[in-house]
Image (tube, rainbow, N blue to C red; front, top):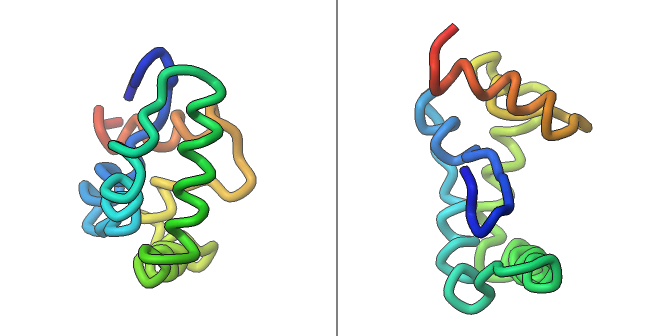
Amino acid sequence: MLNDDIASINIADCLSLVGATSDADQCFGAACDLQCPVTDDASFQLYQQCTTAAEKGGCAKYATAADAVCSPDATPAIAQCTVANGDFKSLILKVGPVFCGP
């Protein structure tokens, strides 16, 4: 997904396609998208600060559930949407087939 020239991987839809949900992402979006639109590196940092605050505040219950889903013990299908300690390239190579097929 490309938003204002910032590439990101749509983890929420990946989880949805493999049968999981990502209420945390929806909560973060509701909490931060309008208040902290990303237009450059500085605003991206503010957006990250907002999501960190939301994770500890109003979105905490969703973030805790998402952490359980994304744990190393997650099912293989769900694990395909995440990479522990991975980089962007590693994750896109795992997530791509969920959207595009093998």
